[in-house]
Length: 588
Image (cartoon, rainbow, N blue to C red):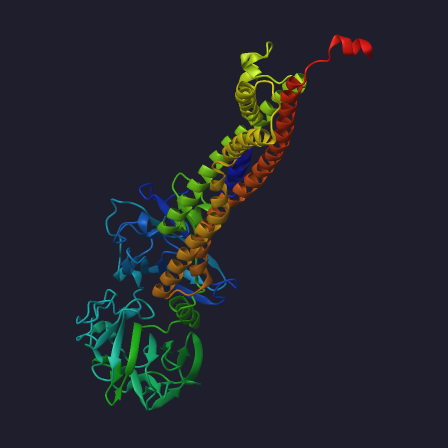
């Protein structure tokens, strides 16, 4: 018991107390999320400003079972743990354990770590999304392409610049949830609106995720009159009036790339995956009329697009790099911290426990049951062997005192009930009584005649049978320890493999391929292996200790059988020899 207390104390020492601050008492859980632009994270410098950050949730970093099925109780709070942040959910599937959420993070700056909080676990919470408020007022239109198939694409800003037609196709496994397919016909059209007005030299930013199926002469991604953003044989280009700017190299065919174009009134720049790929001194002309996405006149696009954004300002390069990293498959911007439960300790262990999937809990429960049963076996078997050893020691003292006059122990005058009860707990007592009983049976048949060789062997066989019975008692339930030793690690490994499979599956479905997405699920899955080892290691030590004592006791019984049978045979032989006559003794 002292060992278990020490282990529990060590575990508790690893779990620091939770922070005192708590945004709202109705929410049971929270998770720290760090937006990291420092060298340990994205490593970007310069002002970024208000940024809409993508938070990918999956079974490896979020406990869906503790939140509402539709995620309505999710809330995001600023670093002061007081200010709610605007957010909205693009998709949320508690069955598969996948969710993508957009969160507005204010005043982001390069080279810093800004912590925000994700709260969940309020069964009575209303929906808390603020779709339009998630994006700053400088956005003219934002398209997630998460509308139902066959429906026009909704603008997620407050401007309501929805497309006039649906995309030709959709892809549920796009880079960010659902995306749009363009087969070379049927570009999306956006009607002219006051929020889309573009006077001469108007600052502007276009950004989108693009996956080109095949290179072609020119494919338009965005088109509005003479202003075209597209790919020429895979190389990003911009035509603005009489000016043409081209990128330095083509985007890869069949892979996602983040393509962005900014115009600040004097310079037009092209960015690929957040890195500047081309620039020229030019300004945009005055533009009006409808906008085409995913193709233009004479410039059809074949491929997929996702997360198209139009802004009325020239977004800083640091923001474009942050978006490309955050929204891509190798997110270095968002780092998930530990889960905390209100009124409970936080820290690494609580985080791992909170991230452990249900299947692993089943495996852990099996291992813990196995450990409990093995502990009971070790305790009861250890007590049994200790009592048997004490009983044997008391019996052997009486056995030596009897010398050649062996009788039933109960017939010894000075043997009390307490001493007799202790001797009966030993293994030698029953062996001895069996030998005495067998001898008395033969004495009734043979009288004082010596035992023949066959009779001695029969006597030995009866005693050996009792030895086998005593060994069976000693070995009883020891198989539980061998099962725990050999089966515990394999059961735990099974849980770990299941947990790793679930983690990688969730990461693949969420498109969040980075160490921060994988590590929590792997750590939680390893808990099953720890449980298996926790069942095996004490069982291994206990088995070796008990088995050594059982072996010693078995050797003791084997030696005692030889002594007992020999002495019983001698006793019977002595009874058959008549005492010397007085005459013979006098003559001598």
